[in-house]
Image (cartoon, rainbow, N blue to C red; front, side):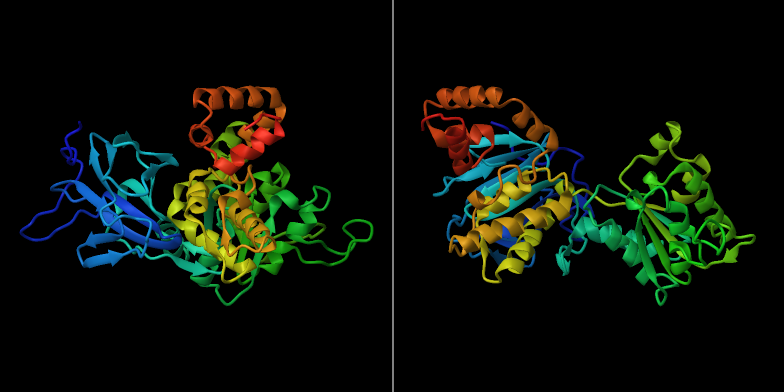
Length: 439
């Protein structure tokens, strides 16, 4: 049995005399209560080092009621020790689950583990700003949790800079951060022009970006490009790493001289604009490979703001899912096991992919006459890593053999086999049927 308590030196301050609390410390994030999105931060106390989770949560300001009939009043206890988390079921009626698997007694898990108690979900976080704003805000489909709020705050601090680089995976909301730069900068009253460098055909890329002058080539007319269109405002260049090398030189000239030279022009035209560049690529590696100019790299990479992938800000997932479902039918509820599965998948397409898949699942639920979106409505491959999907598609025989082996090892208990495979039982049934394996 592990002694319950906080690792020496891990939690810094919690003095009974003055009530001081360290800004960052281990915490439990309550992200769903009875299938409804919430966000509460429960810091792990320095003394005692344990937090009890259940239908009611004790916090400094009183009691938080989750209104979860499936959760026991004291349901599960968590604590941090030796850099890991100990999760102990307290004899709950409906059981405790960690990362989708039922806990028998007590287990030790790593940071980021997801605990389900009844219909409520809890994230175990090693280093959280417990003094920060714990609220979840929504701007259309853009959900703003603590980590996204921190990125937005960084963008606002840099809104007066002439350039800004936003780095993050596809679908993480980089354009929303670029719009925040525009709205909080000195050119907020001007145009916001968004360009995806990866989608501009190479044959017209130069004139599309920088414009053209009459007579520059056969049929050429005086026409402004994206740079001129953004004059007095902000130009957002998404996927900057896809811009051809020859155009990178012209873009550098715009940034340094504040002039644009259209195709066929004999002199430059002054422009006043802020430029936000975004990329999912490692631009330093692109420079080393000769695909990105080093002089442009040094010009656009200060300041830089990193936007976290969705799997790194899972506290936003229940709200994103609820927004997606309500866009299909306002009264639709989300089953806790669906939310749990959404939080456990890596979502390579980030928020964009999740919104699409949950809307599709909600549409299936509505078509079936259901008032709750359940895990069986979600596509099997939704949110999963591409490598796994490719492997399953490329090796169906291997998949069948693994299914047979896991079911046999579980003694024919399909619920246990599903937990071993990280699947919902309904998903396992589908795979068994697909491969002609009797239940």
